[in-house]
Amino acid sequence: MKWLRTLMIGFGALAIAVVAAGFIFQRQIGETIFFRGVDAIAGADRAAGLPDGLHIFVCGSGSPMPDPGRAGPCLGIVAGERAFVVDVGSGGARRLARMGFPMGRLERVYLTHLHSDHFDGLGELLLQAWVGGSRTAPLPVAGPIGVEDVVAGLNTAYRVDAGFRTAHHGPAIADPAGYGARAERIEAPTPTAPSRIILDEGDLKVTVILVDHAPAAPAFGFRIDYKDRSVAISGDTKESAALVAASKGVDILFHEALNANMVQALVEANRSRSQQHIAKILTDIQDYHATPEQAARTASAANAEHFLLYHIVPPIPSPYFTAAYLGDAPNLYKGRLTIAQDRLVVSAPANRNDVRYQMFN
Ligand SMILES: [Zn+2]
Ligand SMILES: [Zn+2]
Image (cartoon, rainbow, N blue to C red; front, top):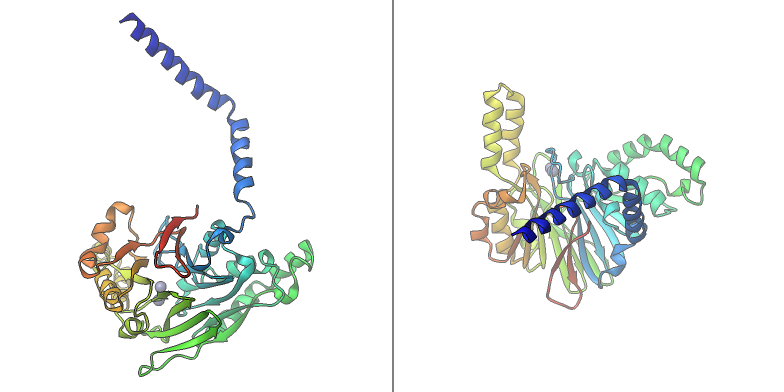
């Protein structure tokens, strides 16, 4: 057995030598890997490699509650050559940049409603769209009544910064005419006619849907049709018959979710520690969101082929908790059900039936 001992000592010495080399040449190895990584991803338009179709970039699958793995609600939409963003919560703009979202083609931001967690990443997105996209006109931001105030406030808040950017990079890069946002109010559909087409150009159609998130009203969901593919996005809502009706037969449904049992556990814990005001807020929020089961009923009634939960409340610490979070939802919806993750791209190529999932890291 002497040979075995010699062999083990040899392997041990080799392992120590590799670790030692990794430590001694840390700077050189780090530089080599970094520069190769930069060469592969910096400045790349990753959407250019996607097939013609409808692609949803999950730039934020979280909610206002702090979640290290999830930015606030944010979905980037690529429809053929056109690009939009639906909501941009905190951290969403950074996710878009990291994922190689085609910022230079961004035409418009749609806001589902004016709870701040749905636009608290908008200032950052406006800056990226302006200097990153070399915009020569303000970015249209479409949303319910009140969007004018949101846009006016952000334009004011970022004006000083915009002056610095133009002074430093020059007007060819940071054109003062392209700075900021321009508000577009979307008139709310009525309860009797709760959805309406608001954009109908060639292969692309955008429909606004009146959902129920009172007292945050009006609150919208959206449906986007490109060629023969479609996605519906709930925004924040209770279980909504209007959303079911407008989402009939969609390829993909993104629906918000709140697990009431988990939130109730947070209520009890906060109450037991005399955090009454937090307990009150966590109690109140349960009446204007949908549970995973209610969202699953909507997906099933709409006959959605693919169903993703986003705006996850409360945060779950790891994918291990998926089954606990979903509860009975998998019994109520028989298609493909996923809890969306940040950096996921869901693709529905035109003139096909399949839907693809890939991570853009
Ligand atoms: Zn909301
Ligand atoms: Zn929200």
